[in-house]
Each structure stands twice: as structure tokens, then as C-alpha cells.
Length: 378
Image (cartoon, rainbow, N blue to C red; front, side, top):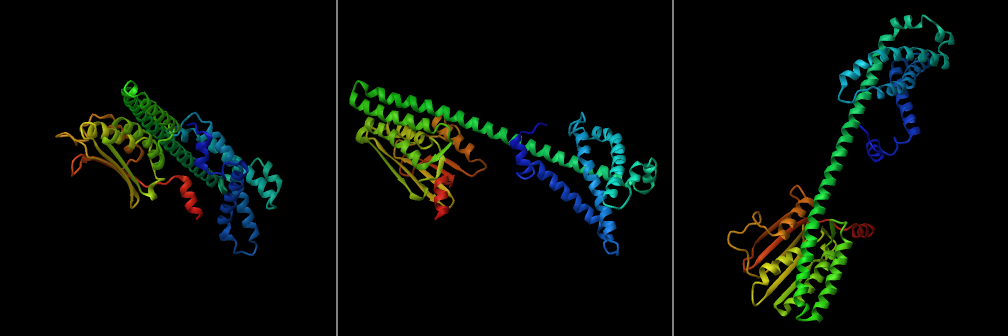
């Protein structure tokens, strides 16, 4: 399986991505093994001999191991064909064990425990068969087993990273698709509102167009973000409300009450406006006397509680959120669930006790990075 550089960095860490660090770490590990196996002989008077002999033994395996890994990496079998990989290693296991014997003899000569003639002795393998060849062969399989475990570990983590990245991309694409459903819907309704005033009052229509331009600018600025600070979301709402106030005049009253501690809390972009639009279109506009819409946001423990309340005509009999066909409500609910899954958020629509409709949104309280950094400095 191919692993890109970013995945490899995530799997290995920053230190082991450098070749010299890997070699240094390997030398340290083989030296520790040599020291551990030499410990029983350190109590004798000539303790340097067993120590040097043990170090030479494990350093020899340290020199042979890269060749073992090189051959294993070029076998035509993947991680799932473990049986074939083991069978393919039978012949190399004998060859590398024999190579280890000669490397060990050379290192013994380097540390002064033997002569160089042993390296050229044609009977060395035969004598090693009785004194340590079988042990060396078992060490070979231990090294290979550890390497296969490491490969499976990498394969598993790389698969998990790849799956997580695909799920994240799919989720992001789905949220973007929901945003794309909202934007044309909002623009169509706003243009209808403006067109209704063009012939009746061109000056009002011009003011509506100015606010609509500001709305489009803010929408474009936030097009690549799924979440924005609540203050930015309310600024977007202000321009929309300005258009509706021009249209309805004194029959429409809109109030906002945003607690200071949640002003910079992150909320899904374009979440409040569709709900206020629903309240005006389906609640307030159907009453001759008009009505009021109130938007509140406050902190409750580790949550941001947002409410949109209107005193309009209310919900029709038998209405439920599950069978609602309204685009604004369905898209808003799906976006909240997509950004805050696993029950960390809540979205509810119900009848208001005094008449009208109440929408409740509960989101995890997460402040923007700038505010969090500022508070950390204080």
C-alpha cells in the first residue's frame, strides 16, 4: 500500500523521518540488546569479554537486518498473503543466517576476541551448526516477525488514516452541498422581495438592493467556511432583516439579544437567517397585524443556546419536524447534525405557549481561535 509523505510523518513522528535518526535509534536498540544478554556474565572477573562478545553478536544482526528488510520489501506478496511471505523467506533465512555467522566472526576480530583467519575458515559454518547456527536462525525469524508486525501496524494505521480522510471529505462535500441548496433559495426569496418594490417604491428597492449586495458579499466571504463566529452570523442577519423591515414596515418587529460570552462562539454558517426567514414567511406575514421575531443566544454550561421565537400563526395541526417539507428547516437540521454529530447538538421546533413558533438550537461552545489565544495570554 502506498503511503504519502504526510501519512508517513503521522505514523512515524518527526524524529524517525530522518535517516540518521533511524540509524542512531537502531544502533542504540541493538546495543541495549547486547548489554541485556551480557548481564549474566558481567559478574565474572573478565567481564569485558562476555560484554564485547554479546555486543558483537547483536551488532552483527544490526548490520544484517537492513538486508533482511530489503529482501522482504521486494517479495511479490502483500500484507494479506502472510503464508506466502513466510514460505518465500525460507531460503533467504538460511542465507542470511550464514551471512550473520561471517559478520559475527569479523566483528569479534574487530573487538579483539578472535582472529581474522576465522572469517576465511571454510569449516566455520559446520562448526557453527553445533554451536549457534540454530540460535541464529531463530533470531532471524524473530527479527522478521517483528518486522511483519511493524508492517501490519503501518498498514492498519495507513488504512485508518485513509478511511478517516475519505469520511472527512465526504462529510465536507455533503455539508457544502447543503450550503449550495441554501444559497440559491435565500437569493431567490430576497430577489422576490426586492422585485415587489421596484415599481411601487424605487427608492426603497434601491435600499434593498444595497443590503442585498452586502448579503452576497458576506455570503461569498464565508463560502469556504462551515462555521463562523456568532457575531458574524448576526451581521449577516442584520442585512436580511433590514430588507424585510423595508418591506413590512412597522408591522414587523425583530429583536436580538446576544450574551457577550457567546458573541464569538462558532456556529454553522447561514444558520440563523433561514430560521428567521421561516418565521417571517410562515408566521408573521400571514397575520394582517404583523408580529415580532426574537433571536436570543446565551451560554448554558458548555453549550450555546440559540432561540428564534415568533408570535405568528403557529404550526399547522399535526405538524412535525420529521414530516416537514421546508427546505430551510431540513437543511439546517442536517447541517447541524453533520457538523456536530454523536448527539453533541440539538435542533427542535415546537409550538410557543403564547402562540407562534419556537426554534431551539443547542451547540457545543467553541470560541474562535483569536479569542481563545487572547484569553490564554491574559
